[in-house]
Length: 122
Image (cartoon, rainbow, N blue to C red; front, side):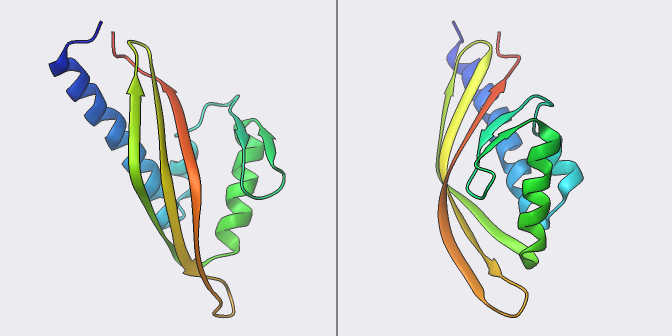
């Protein structure tokens, strides 16, 4: 069982990790972004292909998305919830995406994001 002090410290660590993922998206830093995903990640994504198996294929989805956006992406996570055990953390939030497509079309939409991670919470 985690002590309150340990849970707060670990919660902060998870929040920092999620924030670094969001920053990688904003900057379209594909190399840093992919450090957040296990090689055998399985994802249900927003854009086709909807079910993605493995980090290399998921990287291709991000590459297509980043190429479809002109300049940086304004990406904010709202209402982040974290649930932790001694070995895992599960997070979910609403992601707000704003930006511009090549040609000047403005983009503004919401997505449901969730993240699962092993952690050294024991």
